[in-house]
Image (cartoon, rainbow, N blue to C red):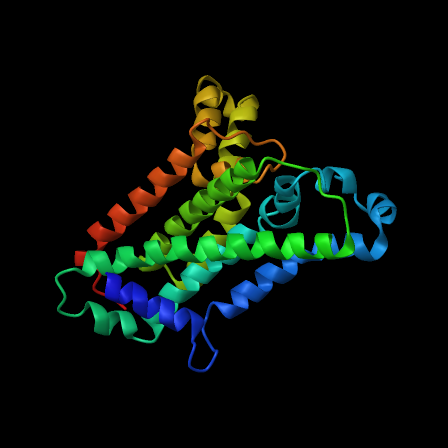
Length: 274
């Protein structure tokens, strides 16, 4: 697994020709993360408040975590870029025959599939760091007043959003290894980033009247189940409105990552297509 991980990291950065697959997602992450703060710098905080409908400059600049949440985490930019990147890598290996050649005749096929989940954790960490730096840089350059925050609290939030993003990527990598078509895999990325499943469960819980009256006794269970899904943990960690993660949110994310690795290990011996 380690040799394959080193090979993937080498292909990611492409040091020989500068054509690694990681540079485009990094650029997208940096641009989208800096966009809102740059707009604030150009227009000024008063004009920004007049244009913004759901927040204010003071709320965005209240602390580094508030800035990060508004610029790249809360809106789902981080989740979408990270999941699409990880699925793109897996599907590229399948489409180009690299996975078929790699897995042929190997006894550790499960470890080869699980390696992509580990790679997803590294990609998620890099994108989180890029988003954090890209959103802070224009604010500091323009002299915008960012509220003080305990450095340990800020680092803790970055760690939680990284784990939550890794969990989403792990689920999408698992889907990419299945016989699901490529378009279907990218659709999974979109639905996971949007939090479609927890939203559906919460919607069913709150719509248990009328023809859905049969679900009324299950409403509390559906609401609680939604909170433990990786998308819900991500949305709550990113401070999306209306979401509250379990107190053990980071542990929940870690469990989803572990479950995805185990599922890949089990899928490996049965993976006969590429």
